[in-house]
Length: 137
Image (cartoon, rainbow, N blue to C red; front, side, top):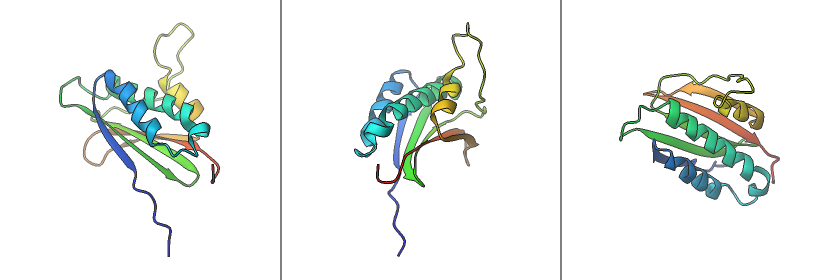
């Protein structure tokens, strides 16, 4: 009999800057206790960066715009997907030292064991990032 996986955790937040803190809090609270010492800080930073980018670049600032988060554990990784209604494809930039913006995906690239951008089947874009952990903590 195969092991039945956990159902991924799922949240939706309004596309508003106040949602960044709320998203970081709920994602951190959903992280299994055994993984918190190993992944908590990095997951919080990934959440903040990806949600901020989704709000800034993937929404139109309309009241109905939502940012969606999904977390799950699979294959020795803890995964975070942040989705927005936008059609753009986020790309890794190399900002110069004087740039005030453009470092979000640089941080994601440095923290995540793997990450990608995928179009959603109906509408929007998802950025998916995984943090590696050793089975059993």
